[in-house]
Length: 277
Image 1: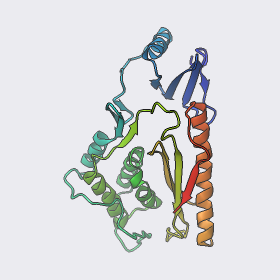
Image 2 (image 1 turned 90 degrees about the vertical axis):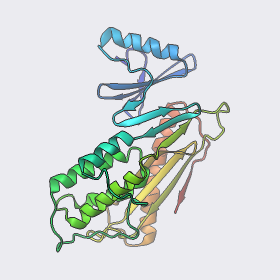
Image 3 (image 1 turned 135 degrees about the vertical axis):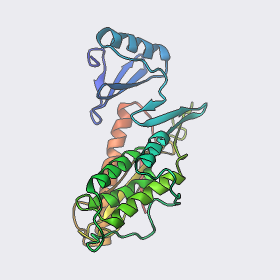
Image 4 (image 1 turned 30 degrees about the vertical axis):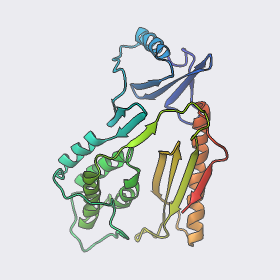
């Protein structure tokens, strides 16, 4: 249906459809049977909605304020994106609603091992907790490393692993008001439109497989748009090799982001800077 209406599918992100008419861009983000539609002029959006109603039964929720667990707060200068409601539900589900908050998502220099001498915990409960935390990563880049750390021990989780996972919940409890802020576009099409990235890694941080963890963060217009923390697939033999792998992963993500921005007709300053830590 979208293709019939003149949309074309984004070549690097298949959930995004774009239609350009008379220098006006209509963007549709599709997730199964849920749609987000955006355009500069509301008349174009209304026309699109009417065309969709001819073919499909649908419910128009108007201005977006909640989507797939993400809450959107509109202000005069931009929007705030957070998961406060979802986090509260997770805290309640795991009996952590009244827990003591923590200032950091991970204890400094924490190195988890298999801890074979420690008690085994409920693997099903542990996986449910991990699944909830990984979804919170959609709006909270700061917990990505900690969530990746506890994911290593999914098969046979033990007491220290569950304690580390609950520590992340304690951190979320104390920082539940944090949100991502996305400002409205500026009149000058290049003003502040900078895409910039950072990459970092440890060396042999995984004490079980001796693999390293890399991470990157990209900001567009000074707000986070892409982030990742993941264990590397190979065992690096030096800190130089670790940093090289992390830089390559960040560079690949940078190329993907540039492709998305170009297909969405969004301007950004070139070349893009990707810095190591």
